[in-house]
Image 1: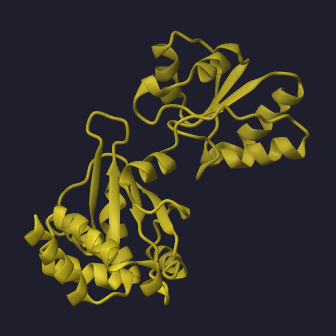
Image 2: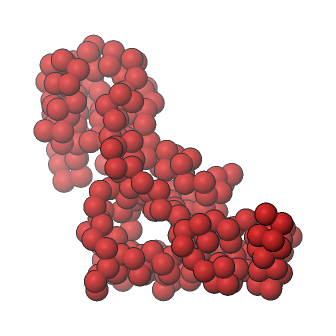
Length: 276
């Protein structure tokens, strides 16, 4: 069952009904879930289910389900089983013939993509990158030619290393950094990988706070000239200028992303400003 990713007002009536009518709740962190339940005046037995106890706790949960009880599976925030150990118990329930239903709710993946303004016709969710530097770089090299928009999760203390490795492996691309979704300090930072890596550099860069969703544009294909019109490239450059990038550099980055000529894009920028 999906739970709010920040704003408790996002919980659905169906989700509240499920919590009120289940026999017990399997929670990623029972302390977090208790706060949610207390806010809505719900009291239910809780069992801990997370990455490091998923096997032993999963056996207890499935045994109770086979005995006729009803369980609601929740994470700390968002949809369980998405980049989450919940996928294991869902799979096990299917194997055992236990009926599984889903109460949909908030998801940081699609919420961040929608608010970012990045291309959303096709996208790939890549989850969390490995904390191991070698594994992280191998992952990035595997997807460097991916043409779809890519979405990642990242914790604040690992953001600097992630962006630096992304820039090294993928080159400079448009990126949206979305933080604190649905919360008081919600923010969308549209920039480029080079600027993001510099902004959050471990050496004197900005100290990040909050939970992050990173959205990065896919690789430009060999037929990119047919995919983008000069006007679309100019609009891409204008979005970079709005983020603080100089016009010449914005035209250069848009040219890299689209395969069009920097001079043509720059002329459209200048002519557009003249017309205004």
